[in-house]
Length: 107
Image (cartoon, rainbow, N blue to C red; front, side, top):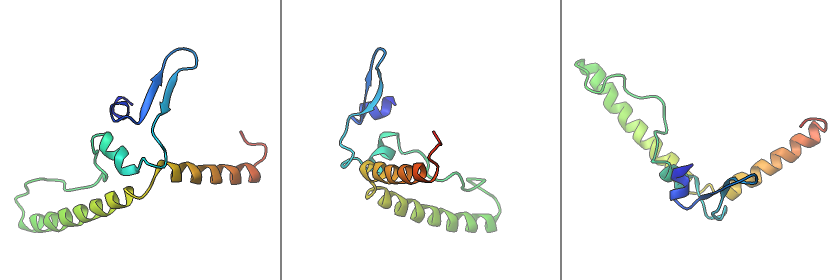
């Protein structure tokens, strides 16, 4: 949360009613900004098993996969630029309302 605070996206309150709060305009904050504020963590949990393999076949495969992963990451980051927190909040509210309608006794 500290990284998000440093980026000006959240604030922390103290005391009984304290806690973390979003302090930025939800319509202006994108998933890309969150990703950058969090230090640009890896987007994929898959990749090459060996960075410097001796096998020429594995080298060729790794080169192809590196390009594919780089292309996929660029596409995903581009999509992140168009998804705002406001859009996510609106989608959540819609889904939550539908869920409550379907399950009126659920908490």
